[in-house]
Amino acid sequence: MQVTRPDFDRAQTEVKPAFGASTDDLENCARGGIVQYGPALANLMQSASSLMSQLQQSERTALLSVLLEGTSGAGKTALTATLALRSDFPFIKLVSPNALVGMGEAQKATTIARIFDDAHKSPLSLIVLDEIERLLEYVRIGPRFSNVVLQTLLTCIKKVPRKTKLIILATTSSAQTLESLELLDAFNVTLHVPALGHAEAITVLKELGITNISDVEPTLRTVSKGIPVKKLMLVVEMALEKSGALHPGRFATTLQETGLLD
Image (cartoon, rainbow, N blue to C red; front, side, top):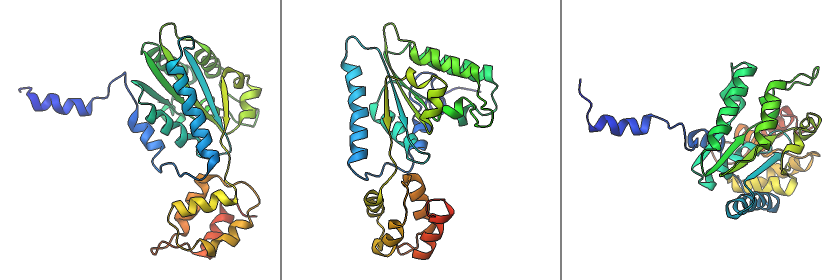
């Protein structure tokens, strides 16, 4: 058996470095892309990008933690993943509940602490904490949560790097829960990710190339609550016909089945 140059070339694509960017995981989170539905989204992205740029240029600040909160399906994960990918930082890691499935409390805490320790060794790092309440194993009945993971997150989020810079982007669907756990105050900035209004929902349909918006607009007007963009895109996918038009009856039925239409 001989090891040749092609073996080394193949290893460079197959072996994932311990330090670096979790681009595959982040691209999967932002697989559907970001639909520019209006000024609210543009301002949100601009605010987050400005904060990240300010940290890079600052000579005094070494730690920035930003929490994106909003209703489930509002697109928080896609937003944070997109911001992380656009940053082009040398060290980017995603900490998500899916990656920690099957781990015990101690193992989860150890894994999270190790990722933060690695981040402190890189000149410029970014960590994405997705769905914090699920990382904490929070359930309303009880309520029940992992105090071990909670204390680990509290310690890691507040720990300021000595010689490097670290940005933490986190998402939650329940800011009230984090406040009761005394975790909300650990973040420097909290940004609200709103659900869609009627005009913004119409803009999303236009961006998706729907050809018969006028046929489904009356149904959209009857929706009295905010529409999470992720749910709207699911409804569109279920009601879309080959012609690029939406089936009005199926559109209304799917809206009702997803809980958006009373």
